[in-house]
Length: 616
Image 1: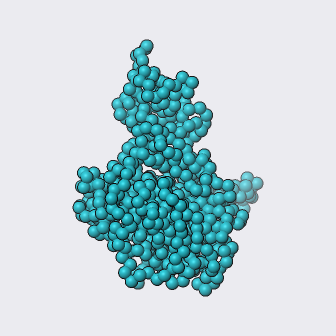
Image 2 (image 1 turned 180 degrees about the horizontal axis):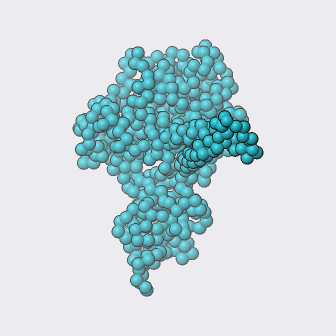
Image 3 (image 1 turned 90 degrees about the vertical axis):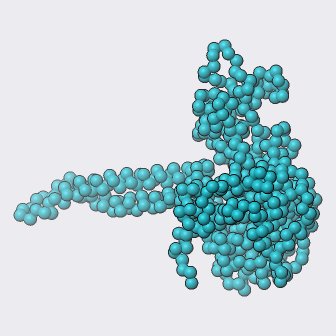
């Protein structure tokens, strides 16, 4: 969350002879038409053997995690997959533990534009990292102000501050009205570690208590636990360590603008969604190109199942012993995949998957942030960007409303939800079994999945919980599937029992995405407003027609005498004539907007799709 969205557009023998220029045009056309939802969309276009450019170079600029040397790209020719396609577990490096501390990391919490301006809203934004609750808000001076992050607990009586509001740039707890400043006045502020410092001169200090006795001092213990926060490339990052950060937040090699996340000459698409499974399963899903033609068959932004094929996957051996992640590359390895484009892949701790590719002038990049919210809940901050597009292609892509692209992206992610949830359920039912006991990994499709789970084996000791390939934190008393204990976990997709298809158990699209995304949420408001207007006008038009029609055509029933038609009668009949066609049009408008409104709430349900298909 890769092949296949483009097949059927051209015959196979024509596709193999495409020039680099025509490849870019096709990529652009498909991107605009199908509302690309994930980096696998670009992979399906750029790397497919059906779009391979004859003579194109297979060398792509590599990228690597912090602390690793620049890597050499392999130029090994594509060869048929070996007879024994099983991936050898544990052959990617030793199994010794690596130094790792989950707190000494920068975590991407949300996009900066998801926090409303002070003139637009007084709301706060809740977040979490490994179950540690946080609250975000805009404070200070100005409409945009400064983004602050603190532990989501009021020092008064432990109520959640994310249930509070922003008032005059301060965070206010709505239980008793205690107010907190994000940052102290620099002119009067002393060092935060000064024990004699006045509480109102500290970051996160309580500056107002409505119930405080006259002349009494605000208690020094009333300060918030503030978190170091940065906005880098339009993403809000927080440092979870106890002290100051030891390094800067991660950046893309393309160098996006810090405040907006945009880059001149590039098309950038951002998307955020919360998902009901552990972040490790999300990361595993996103480094798995093989599932896309099957799981997302004929879905805009997906592929076609007949294009499922093996891949040539190379894991850089000198990166597997790095606690900050690993690197590799992959490309199609089908029978006609000579000179297929390489895709560079990087997994960067604590949960960033980066991909890039280049073919002529066309360049593609992606940064997928898989964040651990809590047990069984993860957040995806999706960002894809590309350049080298003709001007008309940019217009086609950017003319698609963002909210419409977002809804399509929701569908793509939702197609995997039921499948991934069943993976978690399996290991929750079969306590004590490791992934290696029930995973059958293929070197031609699952190499990066195995590498990621083995990385967790080596660094998981430094996380609150983890599920590696051969070990899990449950052996240390912290079960990563604890949130499933005691639930009815029947196999299959039984809506009465299974959380993957039971909306009473799992959140809907509205909870996962819409209520957190300003563009989609505002689009829903407009849709509801249009629907309400159509319904109101429909009722008015129907009422007027019912009352005026008998008056306008009353004379038609008089047969015994000739009654002259007055001017007012003519006007009345014209009014009725205008009302008559408006009634079905308004009803149609209300019906269409209602159907569109449902797309903001109803999640994809695979059973509903399968009932419309044949099993032959």
